[in-house]
Image 1 (cartoon, rainbow, N blue to C red):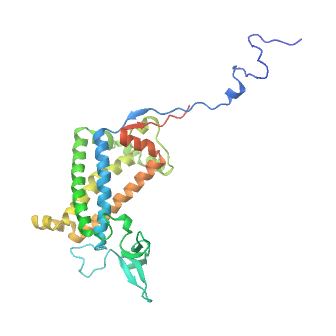
Image 2 (tube, helix red, strand yellow):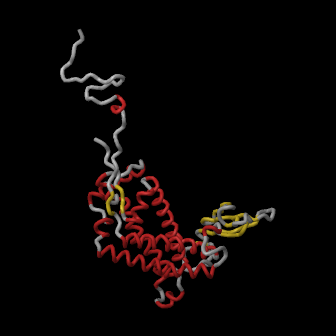
Length: 304
């Protein structure tokens, strides 16, 4: 005689149940994903000023390359013609057979950069003497006068927008609340570096705020690199040199100011590339949505 266990129902035909009364199919089904919650991360003024800055810096960089193309030399000192070796020079030279080559000289050491710098192909595929590829320069190849107009106009846009951001950050406490790291965060720099190298994403409450490396990078850009861009740009203005004679010498002279301007521009490009890389790795659409709508989706907490 078969033994009947109390409290257990006979399963229906063709379906086996476990001790919890779940079907085999449901027992092995993965749990539903836990979606993170949306929260309001960026205020409207921050978003508007961010996109104005993106536009201004992009046009400034590309028009600046066109201006640099007219005199592709980086030199420290008061004059570029004092006989000392240039820190950087990009141009075209003829080889023994009379063939042109793009060359880049760094402190007197020359490299062949044909196709990249000095001698490049234009949109029609023809070789042209140009410091940088034409697609990198605005408003167009070999249009120095218009590039200067674009550069000066967006320099004012950039400066006024930056001033507005600093004032807003102080008044709204965005600077103290979101950008200035505390002592505990400064002590965690090493851990933050390791997390970045391992491409680890912050989760839960930690994802609501910038990590310490982000804060330090933003502060360096806002209060060091961007003001230095403005000051060195002003130092290259003959009108401002005449208005306050001698102040440019504090930067080492006009050529030193021009060299610093060039270096800081490429440091900002490096910052932008790292910034974009981090956005892609940690969720491009999530960060892009946050800077458009203000809403950021927190990564879900890992299941216990």
